[in-house]
Amino acid sequence: MTTEGIAERWLAVRARVAAACERAGRPATDVTIVAVSKTHPLDAIRAAFAAGATDFGENYAQELATKQAELAAAPLALRWHYIGRLQRNKAKLVGGKVALVHAVDTVELAEELARRAGGVVQPILVAVNLGGEATKGGVTAEAAPALARALAGVPGISLDGFMTMPPPADDPEASRPCFRALRALRDRVQDQVGRPLPVLSMGMSHDFEVAIACGASHVRVGTAIFGSRA
View 1 (tube, helix red, strand yellow):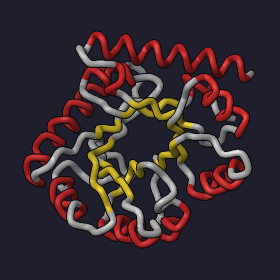
View 2 (spheres, helix red, strand yellow; view 1 turned 90 degrees about the vertical axis):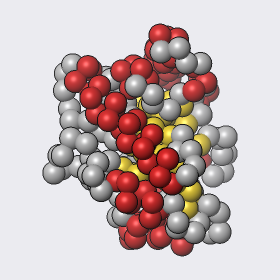
View 3 (tube, one colour; view 1 turned 180 degrees about the horizontal axis):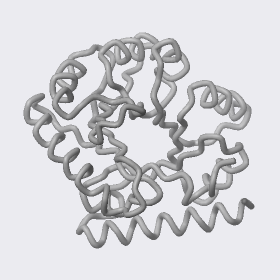
View 4 (cartoon, helix red, strand yellow; view 1 turned 30 degrees about the vertical axis):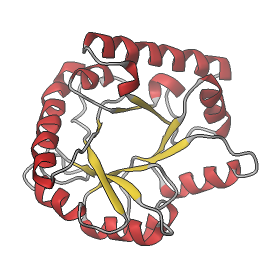
């Protein structure tokens, strides 16, 4: 895809997000679009950034580290998000190097991220597997409150909310029950921990408008911006 095509698609996604927010009675500034740049080259990231994207998501720790190193000579004022499953032995490539880690499902991983963060507080989200899919990480809805309470007490970590990825479906409306369930879970748990948990990371290219209607604060959009991955 040309850089002009990426810019056009970014603007189209931003317009769809704004329209979805208006329908939900929310300001467009409520929703952060995380441009999922995994496997896409630096030129694609630069094109999206030039068009107005500021938040970029990567799924693989080594790819994230490589891109950050390659951009170091002429850094962009962007925010990185780590959105994939993360092994503890790769936490050194992520802790303290991203604005938000979206998929934490153990206290041990959170502790390792904090240890590797170089003295800065690392914001994280609890990954919740609401679809019960064996191929995906994340804790069950039943286990999520206890994990959240434990994570809220880990030094060097800021528990900011929750994320989920519904089972794949052609109909975006099929994701709505999962999105509603995550919001309800967040509302219960923030009462238990005694402080706001403002982030709900949910919704991707095919269903982010439904996610916004259900309260998403962050939507993770890749294909609709960058096109299909090779």
